[in-house]
Image (tube, rainbow, N blue to C red; front, side, top):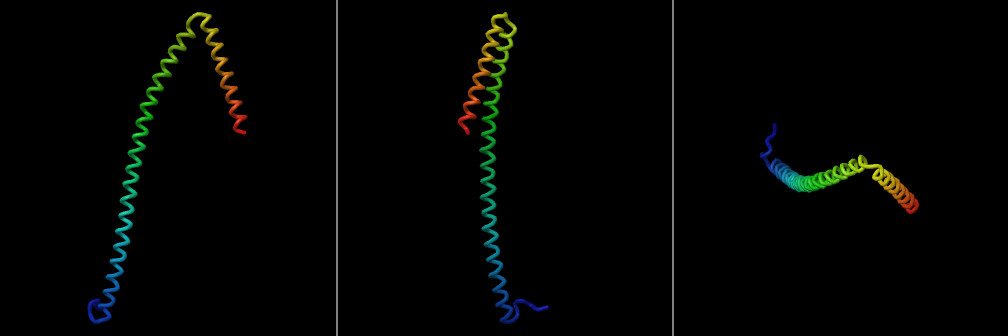
Length: 111
């Protein structure tokens, strides 16, 4: 086996290999730096999304509370006298017609 450090040709080869190793190490260090920055960006993004989801959760709980109260009032109104049922039916039909008209107008505006 030949020894790398022996003679002038071995010294030149060792210098070339050393320069190549340094160049590759610098390239690897650059890639590691980019990966670290990418990992930090992913971490920051995940924390931001977690905060957003926590906010959505609290808003959803408040909406659930509002809907529960509305359903209770609606149920008590439906169970009450006959006049309230007619009023409830009239309001329901009116709302359905209103949403139907709005849907028709928005569909026409979209085309």
